[in-house]
Length: 300
Image 1 (cartoon, rainbow, N blue to C red):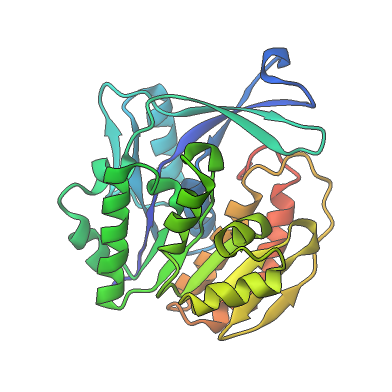
Image 2 (cartoon, one colour):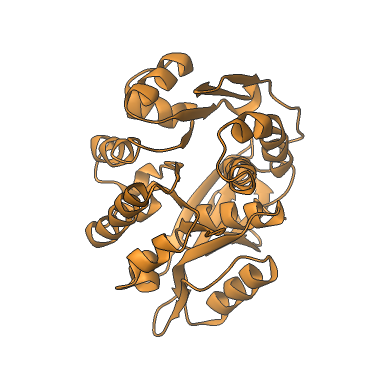
């Protein structure tokens, strides 16, 4: 039986200005950190003992090789990860506001990583996986969206569990409606959908997290986790759990949700995607997400 979870999405480099409350032109220095939401999730899951494979791409340049080496060192399987010639690895210049919330300016060519990584072997990759993780980051472009949705359909047809984290980056979308519709298309049949409060409201039209969770369950998710920032998280669906927030001395919120999701994904994968594992892991996931806020970058 397959034991590796296939994660769709790119890795990129975050160049973070550590001084808070300055705009990009005022930044005096930038610190390189590993980045990319799905890559952060894959690394976190690997750190917590799960076997994960990242399907994505970076440029065949110094930064791309730095990312690939880091992924390899962290134990992420790279059978479906590619370095693409004559393409620049995506760099995100990141500034932090006074509360540690990030603002991003992207540089690079926006590699369609899933297309580069899977090519004509999508069905082989999915059939060889124990589960599939995806987000909307590979749904913005039409071609990559088609590959991602094919992967989702193949997983569901094979009875593989699908875990979905919208991770909506609204500046990348033509409209809020398009972003919400694309995210909602991935909800039916998902074992777990993890959103933050704002994403849940956008997807469902419900500002109250309880009503938003109910709407996502009615749309076809088996389990829904909605994270509430410093107020913790709720789990609804086949199981129910409430976890209060964990105190943190916030340096940066970059990737905190990625770390939380990575812990949930690892615990599900290690349990053979047994749903109660999500409930058992939720407190640990909230704790790890809070700890991520105390460092500069999701992973370090």
